Image (cartoon, rainbow, N blue to C red; front, side, top):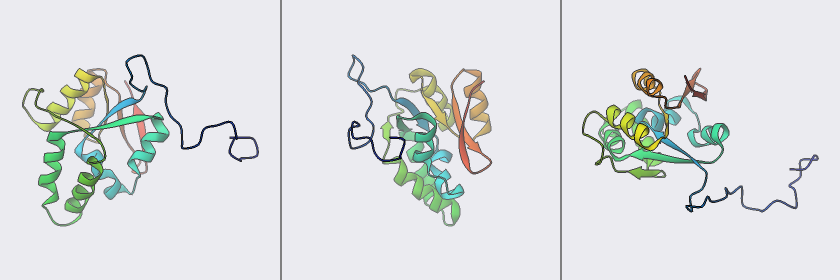
Length: 155
């Protein structure tokens, strides 16, 4: 952007693109989304992907298949939680869905933690127990702050 807030004529159109590394992968941060993260837009009127873009720049959103199954179960309910889960399912379909089959079976939270440790992903969650376990393992966490914005947390 130029000083007068007009678009710089020397910048390519179509938004920013990241350079590829020698393996052909872009330098995007991998972000693993929990079920309650996908429900945040309906519950707190927060644009999840826009907030993540503001914090991280380029990112690759990833959702475990077990998280999608959890949301499918919650989506059957009526009321606020059901509608939030249905919106979460729609948002989850826009993300990369990773199979949780190679992760030892257990709770969805345990699979989420194990996947983040194995792949080195950051995690978006509001679950305090999951957040504390991720901190103990040295994984970065993005969480809600004052029910208005997302915040990057590290310990």
